Length: 173
Image (cartoon, helix red, strand yellow):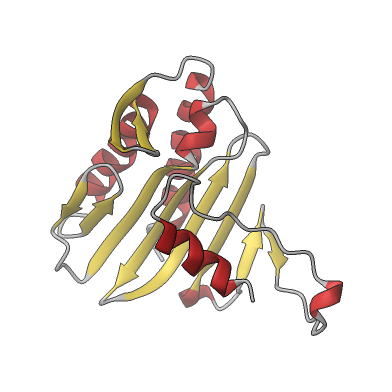
């Protein structure tokens, strides 16, 4: 709990750094054919990792770019420095900074910041307040009829192995 306020500010700081670089994106490397990493991914990861390693000694860290560090610790931070890198690299405003905290294998808090819309989603189990968007409580719909629900999803890339695409499509049934 004591980390949460500063961690929210940290995630926003990472988002501001990403937004400032969005028109000057440089590819750092391709992880595979459709999975890339930008220099901004590495910058945001560095901002967050440096703070957490300094302020939360003994905590582990897992990041999409850096991999794992002390992943057997009781507390482990899980970061996607730019969730939606492929969109970010194309200049599309469909990216976020996503950070979660796990305690002994259970996620206890999560923060997602979307710089382009200044939306900060937070959920923390210890506060028992559920999820919030910019400090306003949010919740899932109570709607039971699928015909009354809007669904938005992202399927794997067209260059993904056929079995991955088929598996994604099968889940839509």
